[in-house]
Image 1 (cartoon, rainbow, N blue to C red):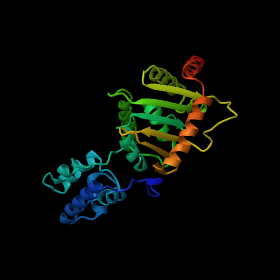
Image 2 (image 1 turned 180 degrees about the horizontal axis):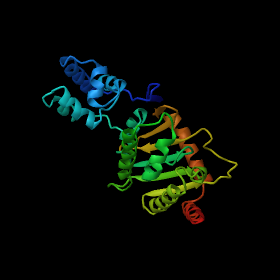
Image 3 (image 1 turned 90 degrees about the horizontal axis):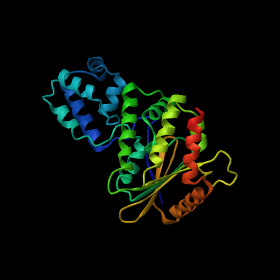
Image 4 (image 1 turned 30 degrees about the vertical axis):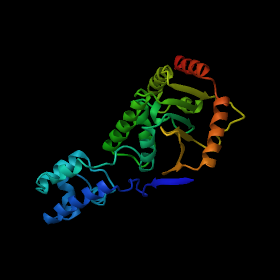
Length: 280
């Protein structure tokens, strides 16, 4: 079974959660109480009218400075700040990825194959920032900071106890691309070597030349829950899918097993990373 975990609108804004809708309704009520339109409120809180509209509709996580300014401008008696404390949507993670991110937090083991970008659990701050800035539409400074912070925060999973068993297979081409420039790439290679030394993480590189390749259909993630149930996740442009059907997961596990056999061993992968670092 494949479950669509949600998509964004054409403007890239996340789907609304109940807590976001609730905050938006409160903000709208106080705006109307003050006799202001969205266009009139926008300059007072120093945000564009469409941002005010998105927040009121529960489609955008309200920034802290928006909350503080709206609280003062609308004389909201502390209500907006109180409502903001109950917001459940985590800013910085794509709408379609949040369900999977929650499952990752409870996983016993997690297998990841990536051919598009170095997995978020392995990214450095510089690489995460470069990736965020690479993909249109251009994010705001605040959105960049939220996405980078959320990505780095997830990396606590690598060392939290009880330990999760991690397996990563990533394409050498991702590192040869030099996303963010040479300095970012140096830092990334050093970081990957450091992660490879963790006792619970196995890192394998798929070499540039590999005629027999089981990952042609794209990236995949497979995890084992604490109840020893297997789930999978697949992601594409503006969407992600949670895969729960046993037959579908069996196919992905077969492909991942073959990918691990086709990629360089953990030891050879670390040696390659060190050679690439030395060549920069």
